[in-house]
Image (cartoon, rainbow, N blue to C red):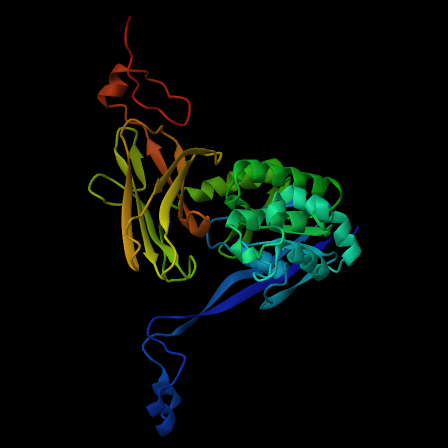
Length: 406
């Protein structure tokens, strides 16, 4: 049996312009035809390889998770497989129709109604109108957008967008389904429905490629995983083996800083995330007795959105333990900084992940998400530890509980 996807020596490079360089000439420079070397402003161009020399095969019916830290090349790989962008090097062989769900609204025309977009997507996949009509009721029922079928999708919330887009992608019978982190926009019930549909999709001999930072979701759906690191495949193995490797990597990611305005969207992006101590100094390790802060710096670039900072605190299995939202009152353009303080004697001595998002609610629009990790150590010299339980405290949280003898 031939692979349904064969990737051979795949590479994708971009040219990065550093600050100070301008791609145009002034009127004076054009008139006097200054030498080319004088047209270069301060700064330079750099070739950046988002993917380099990536090779793997996927067999029909495989459900493959693609994981890795931010910037590892996951989304770039899916865009190449979905033929949204062209590779710089190597080649991709696809032996089947591909349906992709990469970003909110991908593949939809904003001016068309939900009904019209269903038929448009079917046509893009090469299906006859009669085939799409046969699946129409099932798609609408799954998406739950019957009341808004004849409304232009530009008026949909991001949740409605995703529900309809996933329903279309999963029900129009492509041989290959490609799904990125976009499912995070949906609620828990919808995510459960999507996982069930993807499991059914794979059991029918079709192929699923799934990118997510939610390791529990990847583990429940996939039997195999690819771990990407700096644009290359670091590990390609059974999902349990790859997840162990990935969790070891995440210990290094205790801070995040955007090196350029490449993240987010036209409205906002995350500039920096750090774990800080009481003096606002960044730290990578702390003890259970320390008061720690989640420092978030973000930039509002455009008018019209009302961004809010939020975080999810996750354990080593990517279960969400705590969720916090800061309703930002100041929506002026420029840099904003917030800190959320976690009290001492609350976290246990394990590794945690902190997933930070900049988003707009009503409708929910995620401008950017980034994840960092940090480690909490025990403190056997603290008064609480000296007078209390001396062994490792089980669980993911360990607050200093108040006991009363009656």
